[in-house]
Each structure stands twice: as C-alpha cells, then as structure tokens.
Length: 121
Image 1 (cartoon, rainbow, N blue to C red):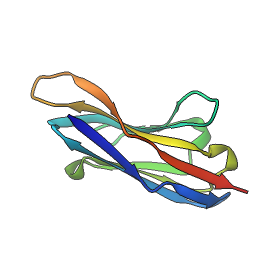
Image 2: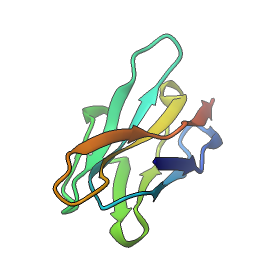
Image 3: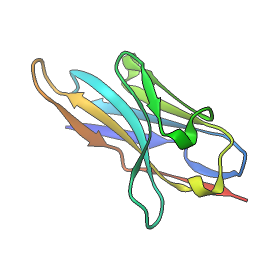
C-alpha cells in the first residue's frame, strides 16, 4: 500500500504565504509525476501544479508567478510554496502521486487526505 500525508495547511491572511508538504510512504519503486490539486466548497477539484520526475513543472494559469512546486526524490516528497494568497484560494489542497510499486509495473495515482488552506481578508 502507498500513503500520502500532507502538512502545512492553515489560516493565513490575504497576501500571505504558506508552504505545503507531502510525503509518500509504503511500497514504492518509483514515482513519476507528483502534484497538488485543490477543491473549494461547491467546486470541482482542480490542478494547481504538477512536477515530473525530472523536475519539469506546470502550473494553473491563476497561480503562475506566485506558487512554486518542488520535490525531493530521495524523500518521496513534494512541496508547494504559495505566496500572495487570495481569499478565493481557500480550499482543501490534495497531494497526488503517480506511483510504481515494482519494476515494470504501471503507475497508479494515489491521493492524500487533504489539508485545509483558509485565506482570510
């Protein structure tokens, strides 16, 4: 089994910063892409940022220039540095990883339990 555990969420004022962390553990051979998604109340889950195993990253247009995704392959971890946060970015943020559990096996998506980020005015 594979577990993803997020941390770092919380309450922040608009314009402030937060750093989210996510660590994967369990039976892991390798991890392809890792990413962060978010889901606000009444809205669909959306991609925030995603980073490949080679560290190339892509971002939602709304966060470009303000958020930075990074990963530590040795720790099976992914991070999201968020700055200039806006009230409308209040959401549950989920970590995602495409994990291969053995040599020659397909990669499957795993999700964390989510961490709440609340941006106040």
